Image (cartoon, rainbow, N blue to C red):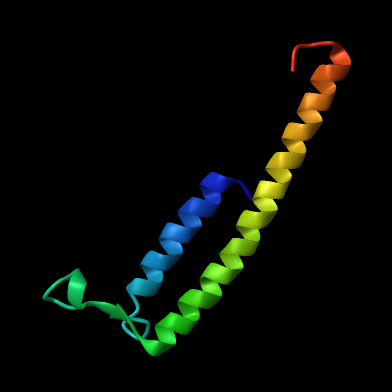
Length: 80
């Protein structure tokens, strides 16, 4: 999964969790009075932990791809 996709999933996922009244209390007064419920906090932590694994994997893939590109350029005699 690419970084852009992960960003979209993170934003969309948290947004959807916030729309669930079992997970997030949205105050009509404003954001300062809104908060995650106890159940919501647990679900959010689980979601973020899951997404961090995806982020870690994406970063490893990007680094591996970049390293391979540099090696190929070096073998072709291109400036690295």
